Image 1 (cartoon, rainbow, N blue to C red):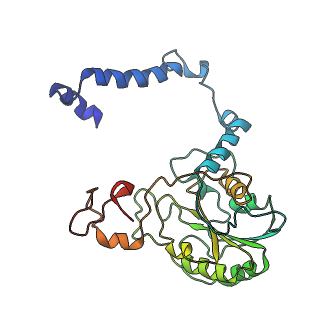
Image 2: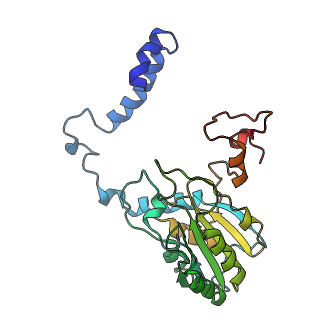
Length: 288
């Protein structure tokens, strides 16, 4: 876009040439620091970086810290969280995202150094009973509900890891609604009702999901939104569930209820609410 239109913008006085120069200085300065104008790249300081550099302990710890910082606490009645390794010795880990790896890095990601799934992370704190409940996030039937409910009945606490993945939301893949896909909501409600101990909901998604049902369900004591937390996401989730880390993340997008979709055409990009029932967009204008 800039390559096509910047020169005309300068000629029309919409843009100053000094603005262009400033942007170029910022870009070229970084390139110079990287040695990109100093000859053969492999002979320069940054020319031979590879997995051994990316996967150093300090960098992997940074991935873990980023995941911890990004997790958002949405509900904690009691408070139930953090769980206790002494009281919650057995944890039922249930849900289509309970043992995922690649799902956690979303898209626009490099090759991970290694993964810690939610099941593996929780397993560092307690004995786990694992059941998917649904084969994948599409959750097209309830055929696997039985073993999941049985796991919840026999555990000291239940952690449901549900939500979305790139099969549901990605470039070229648009969601048609804001509710959990398929039978996921039914799985959550039934597991929470069957659980012997507290039920914690962990949600993986890039965009908002209407989980009003879980917010209003007294059997669901805690809700965490983890986004797509990266290679160490499972470890970060477990650290927050058991209190090794305290979540301080804030939602990066405005969350709307399913009914919101009825009040606006998705082709209407206006931000401000209007007098004809248009609710407005983003936290700046939407009052929900």
